[in-house]
Image: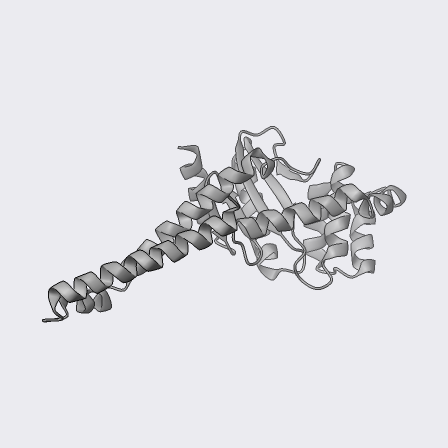
Amino acid sequence: MPVELRNSLLTALLALVFGFLGAAIWSYAGLADNRTRAYLIENPSILQDVAEALAAEQAREQLASLGDDLTTPFPGAVIGNPEGSKVLVEFTDYNCPYCAASLEDIQKLVAEDPDLKVVMREWPIFEGSEGAARMALAAASQGKYRAFHERLFAAGDTSQQGVEEAARAVGLDMERAAADMASEAVSIELARNQTYARTLGFSGTPAFVAGDITLGGAVGYERLKEALAESAS
């Protein structure tokens, strides 16, 4: 059964169960003192905890459905140790200021742990980002993904001219890069990354996956390090 359909059925079932359960509770209590209602009003975090637990379980199921595909990078699109046993997946966009802010966190994590592999998923969701994403994957094909990635974020210019200047600055073969940018392999990779992101429920960049833990947004160095430690335990 597709994940989306299963989740919809689960939501409907929970609504039905809670509806009957709630009716039974109120009937039994006779609304005598509304203690249950008052308790929930005074402790709304209970419902939030239940919702978060359900979302986490759904995320684990969705991750399981993706198998090893999610952590298998587009050739060369890796920061850190390509053979590392500790894996962090990042969905990124070159026009995302929070992705730029998270770059320092990734650099710090990689510098501290020589066994860390950061699998980069180009997900161009901002206007004007696709050309930069395609060039990044072309750079990956030439073994220069990290150099291009860091250069373009530092420059902050994702116009065609800015992307090409960053590519030249890191020494890309521009003729080969142009061909790779337009290749079917790169187009498939971008479509695949979007599917992964949507399947996992991400709504924007950056987004991260460490083991069975999913994180949306610029969560910071400490949370990323914590997630990696939790996924390794």
